[in-house]
Length: 579
Image (cartoon, rainbow, N blue to C red; front, side, top):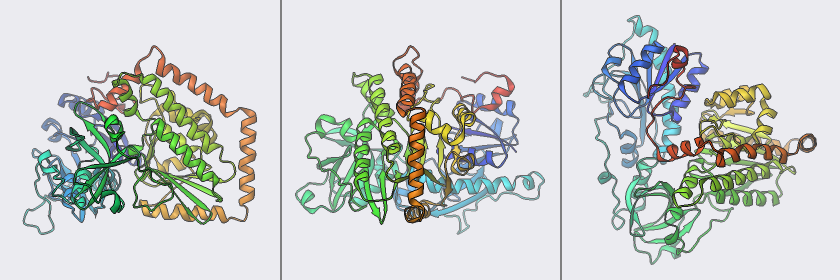
């Protein structure tokens, strides 16, 4: 089929659908929902069989839906309507939620239902549930809908309109959730209530509150491990300590780590960066690398027999200079342990997305140099990559539980084995961020896996790549695990098998020999110097594209046009992007 994908932005759900439908042989083109006239023009140029809208913030124009079948992906159960579906479900503690694919009509979210899926609602942030359960359910429901399309065209099948008196239809029209609905009363609300409210607002818009007497929005909350001595004398709302960019805040029955905040007129940053002077007065309570999983911290190490597992769960996968340095220290610690295999499992939702653009923009806004901070950050990322490449005394595994982009993809390729969960999306390219050249030794790591020609194509196409297709292309070694628990269990089993293999010594010797051969042919330092010479021009040169792209990304500027590599209908028609 010819499918026009209409979306507010090319977010994780849209990318997953784009990749899977392209793999199924559909011809796809993307248009950002900028204006009704732009949508109408895209339909006229592409002449699609169907319009698919996985992520919209406003209605499709009647001039389109009245003439072309338009399917909307709504992150709610059948009958649910309104723009805050997932927010309400998480804040209310629903046990089950779902995704509905419905046909666009005059009333939003009220058209006939083509397909739906339900899933247990995990206790997690809105963004995490959206990227995982919602995305998996949406893909299944969209595929079911497309399978019905020919019968619908022939009049052999019709979608069903939800009936309010049907006991199976639990969803209702729900209003836009306001900050009044999200408000926290630190003296009255318990930890679970506060946690649910911040989780329901995570990603966007956050919960309007205050820290250190200054108004801000709260994000990224984590329950604190029980520490009676630390909070015994604290008044609910008091700030007690700091750790890994977060501040510890007392509740009436415990405490929460608040990881990220957005000050009025500012950008989302770690709490101790946004309130640097104030947070510096709090006592630091570092998290030991080896600890109970319930005790929150960005880095954690554990051992399962001869297998070491190092997680680095950085918010949204962004890795600032200081985070990279702490990760290198953690890798050095893992190197000191008597294990045979080291599994690097990144974060639960992201493996890594490379350099920390918000921290770089914050340096610029504070009167510093974005170029200098970019340079420090990319060198720190290179150092992490080098630390993995130089782990030649054991086998290494990159276990990608979540998505990865840009330098984060190539960081994973530094490991000996790269495994990814089936639903993971990779974006192994840099050009979308102001034509960045990239580093992280990609000029060594990518051709080593896929060859020179395929490496050039991957970097030029700038398209998302699902884990199964990445495995087929040789970019990664394997894709498995229908969900995160299944993936983690299989990773551990495979890693233990590597460690116990009778030919382990031969595999390790072969790894060491290849590294020595590659180093003699061209040292890693040469790859790094060549990459950084190009990156220096990106950061300090006359072309400001990177700095402009970073600013608009961080500030979430509205889209003004659809990139040509997505809007394929415009290239074919010879039309210029509408602005």
